[in-house]
Image (spheres, rainbow, N blue to C red):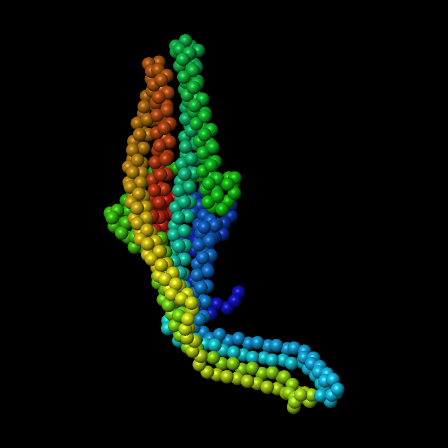
Length: 460
């Protein structure tokens, strides 16, 4: 690895997920997926292996090297040249052999030159500010990419967890439907129920079997998507933990939504990226203007050679050495560039306008995203409670209908309706819990606040 005089490698994170790894996520070294897979592992694998996070990491390396290149402009340029040739020179003068000559020699020439820009009306300073602003933009963009990958991984994790829970619920619904079918068949065989009871129960059982098969397919799609997020083969087997419904919604985001929006519009990585690119565009315009102004340089050169010397035409050559050097100041003054500089300045100024409007759009979009995510979280918090109450009611209704049917005072439609309501309530409970957890992390992502702490909270 080449010498890093300006220490730019220290600016670059060690891994694609280093900014999050510093907050207690393990390094980018993985074995087989855990069983069950935890949210922190799923997120960390995604942050380390996702091509988008790796691209953002590489972009930071590019811009860090650009800062080093801009700083190097303050140092002198020293170059050396060496040449060694075989000189075979023959001259035949017709009729005057005394004037003829034949010289064969090995000639070498060496030189060292220096050019050191001393003053350029702020061109190098503007170039350095431009490079530093682009590095800031790249780091903010990497943070935004990590936040987005974090949110995507968490969303897909909860989708897979919900799909696994729904599959288990579908299996339980299928079992209940089978038991209802057996009970109805027994009553028909004993002549205490019409054959229609058995057929309706059998239809419900077939529908439950269909739903269980569909839930199984949905689960495999969700697991494949999560595996792909983590950089694994979609066919890789993953075991998801059961949905824990022992945690009630909290109030992590206690400030008002207006305060959240204002804070996000100031500090969100997308806004920071746009602002840094605007700063880079302003510096680029200053750099472009300064390139059309004079610059003052210190120049020096030393050369030496062993070119043979001769007293005159037709005279033999003699071994000789020579050297030459100069030292002084050089002034370069651009006088006319075909109006190119004028249009380059206009282009740079137009880029400032573009970046200003991009910054305005980033702030607008961040504010809208926070508003939408906040409202979604409020809805999901309320629905967690609603789903829990609905499940309790549905369970009591099914128990009552089952008891009434077994006692011969209820009908099959009552039982099947209660059974269907219980199945739907169970699915809604699972979906509400995972939606709430995903919405909480999504709002943190829209605020630009995702961290390792959010993973720990989301794993509860």
